[in-house]
Image (cartoon, one colour):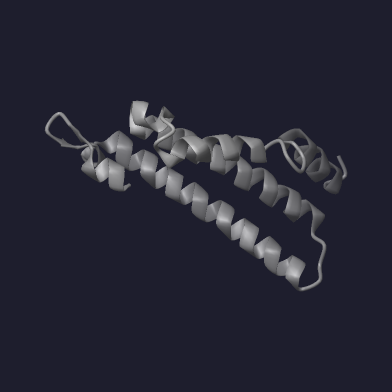
Length: 118
């Protein structure tokens, strides 16, 4: 958000543009939703449960959101987002790897489907 507040285009910060505001709002909302699912699932795990469906859902959602948010951040940063000098470039690579490691999205979906009896 700091970058959007400081980056000027057409004589004003890009954070003044509706499309950027909405993108930042969507990013924050997705992060909050994923965080809530992860925290609730972690609490259940800590309480001695083994909620397989929720664990898989949390991993699937959190990693998808991480990729989407990193991708949106790159879009907002423009060419800077692609440069190694900006941490978002690394965040995107790390987020993408998280969708592969410890079970791909497709494996998570299979686990979730089985938990529904599908």
